[in-house]
Length: 339
Ligand code: TXA
Ligand code: MG
Image 1 (tube, rainbow, N blue to C red):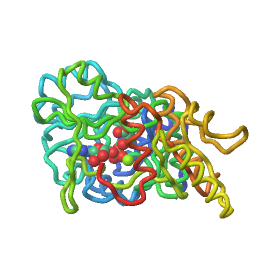
Image 2 (image 1 turned 90 degrees about the vertical axis):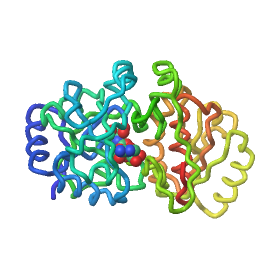
Image 3 (image 1 turned 45 degrees about the vertical axis):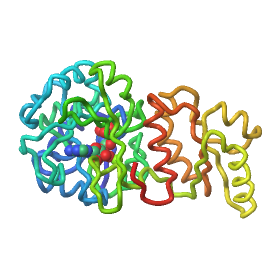
Image 4 (image 1 turned 120 degrees about the vertical axis):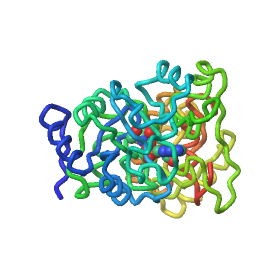
């Protein structure tokens, strides 16, 4: 199969619609990361998405809709505080998990009676979703456990020959996946941290918890995708906390002595303090949103330039950084860890 990368225009949208309505799969940009989209109503399309990604079949998908789509078609109960959240943050990088009407393919939620729904703010994503005018399920468009894609090129690198079309909407400005919040209870519970922070949700709803499971082997997580090692660059990775500079340098010396190409990944102030002029540094930047936007692209870059990636945790841990740290820790995890 030839994989075409097309800018988003009338012609490519017509082609995308044709593919989606006949049960095929199209990669689309969003403001967070690229997604691998298919019709939520089509069992075969949903099955295909799991197969192409190599995704475990206990990890449910998010249904994406355009801002005018009537979500009562697919969700069964809508607590008043969810409407407040939609008003405050949507369209945007917040996914809400509702009780499902069961109208989408049962494969979407992997047997759960809930459905995750997201309204992206990316103009190209909205044009695509309006063109098809049905909910499009779209996991991040990366091979399962690989780093999420923030450009059309990243998607191509993982799926060349496997999908017919990548809609190219430029580089994603958000950079980490949407915040996932469960709204089936009395107040929202964050299942996956992201750019819409706990503090932001609390400011609207008064209360917002973060699901932090103490999982034992065999337990099923509420957001099953959070169980796995994720976002992994294909190189050796080490992660040190913000006080681990000296240990990081020792590791770098030891690895370099083995003839390996060593790169540091850290925020700019840490790089300035720790690394010599001209040393290999992948610079996360300075602000929270900049670090979120840069993280995945740098992890993908690492696998092309480095044998060993030595990451140092940014100092700030809350707000948007909760999401950045969650991804960074999983990228550098040595085995499956529940988070
Ligand atoms: O920003 C994003 O959310 C991107 C773009 C493409 O929209 N999509 C994305 O999808 O990150 P994915 O499949 O990589 O991650 C979906 C997350 C997983 O952690 C999954 O477990 C959780 O959402 N999820 C989906 N449906 C759920 C449900 N019914 N209940 C609980 N968690 C759910
Ligand atoms: Mg993903």
